[in-house]
Length: 205
Image (cartoon, rainbow, N blue to C red; front, side, top):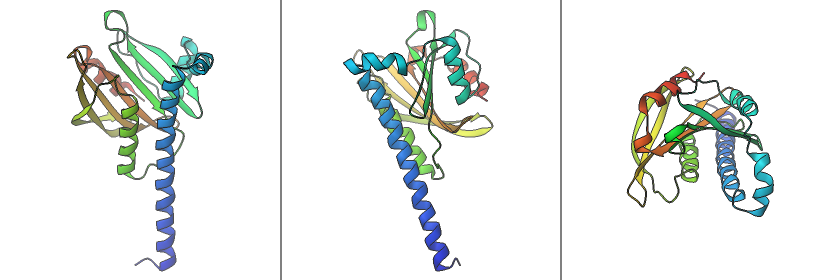
């Protein structure tokens, strides 16, 4: 059995890991809240151009620091952000499906993620901040996929808009190029192209 000092040391390490994870969770939520709030304020009108990267070359530079992937046919990188240690890229369809579905990859600053339960809390906390308008999303299942050689469990949530349209969100976390990455795919069910989404997930490296 571990000695008293060793047990104390192990407990201390667990507490530090939990604390770092919770800090990461709070920071991620704070980041997304800042993005949402600033976008609707006068200060946001001044800062938003700096937060939001629209030039294709610069978007590609940010995305490659998160993970490499192949865009599904008919999709493009919409914008990116590189702020306060967070890197984010948003991807979506063009043409008639534009705006109906969005794929977001959000890279967190390096934090300890040993506890699966706390990792799930991060996913759920950020999912609440990236919900679709006033839609209440409810758990609708889980699925396992392979991303960058890792088995990743994705959570599926569904909800209904005030006008009766079904929306859904798929979320999960994987280890990206430079740290943990939160994946969110949100959109209307009628725009949900499962084969292309599966191909995109399989292409991430």
